Image 1: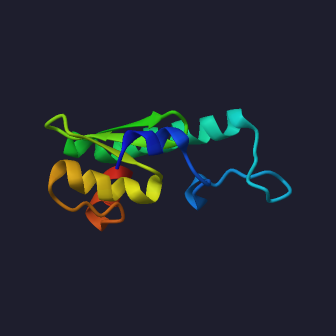
Image 2: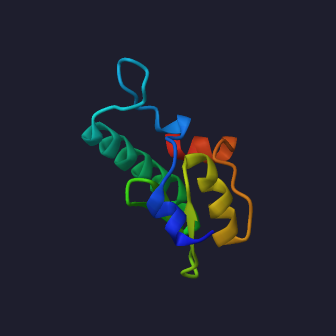
Image 3: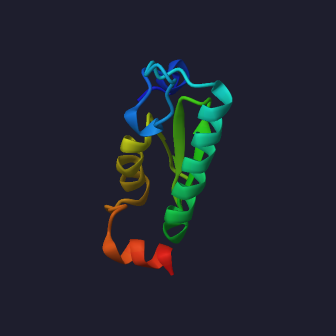
Length: 105
């Protein structure tokens, strides 16, 4: 994907989960930034074992950097796991019971 698509952004993904009271999806910008920061922190906690780093990019997408330095752009949290597989060369299931147990412990 061209990097310009990430800058232009698109419709909010359902996983962002921050919407206005009227259901319009237009929550205060600082709430959206705060929620994205929490999502990035949690993703980095999960991916640390795989030497993968996630960063917010322009508030519209995420950069995923693998252990070799390869960078992919994920449009949303749903696409994030596909991009992790691309930079590591192996599948990762974020709901893997062993991973969830390790995060709890």
